[in-house]
Image (cartoon, rainbow, N blue to C red; front, side, top):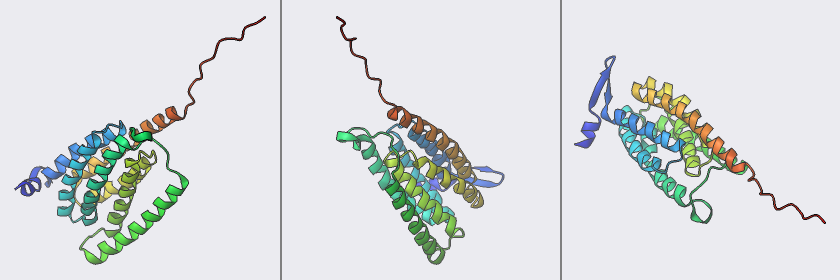
Amino acid sequence: MIIDWLTGTAFRVAGTGTTWAELLGFATGVLNVWLVARQKIANWPIGIANVLLLMVLFWTAGLYADAGLQVVYVALGCYGWWHWLFGGERRTRLTVSRTGRREWLALAAAGVLLTGALWVLLDRGTDSTVPLPDALTTALSLLATYGQTRKRVESWWLWIAADLIYIPLYAYKGLHLTAVLYLVFLALCVLGLRAWRADLRRADRPSAVPQGPAPATA
């Protein structure tokens, strides 16, 4: 069965087993973030494959909010795929943009509410040993993915914040390869932020207006 194979041990490091799901999640995850940073549409199908692998990994590690989050990621991946292709003006390809003040306020409110609700759910309804960081990273990741689907440059800052929590969290849960993966993600997010900001600056730069012919003199 495919699930049994994915949860089987691929290799061991210092006595700790690494599953095939974690190994394949590492590979597809790095490729996905690299493609996002380069604004390649192929990031969406690769990303969907990545989250399905991570869903298996997180569920077996007891990170239930992160496992459930992957289901939402699949839906957001399909939406982002479509929106990058047709979300621009007159159904053209989407371009990089900034997050507005009202949108930031809405995202902040949604983040606080989502973190609180997930924290209570995980603390009271599951055997999770890390309910607060699991809830917080889940909320940050959802907000970052929303921004990514709309090519908001600030979505990279949300990913960076989430990764800074994910790295020690996964190390604590014994998912050492995944912790390394998120360290790679952190570096790629910084590169992605720089690339998208450069693209935004180019778009903001006024186009040179060609000069007309010099006026005739008498």
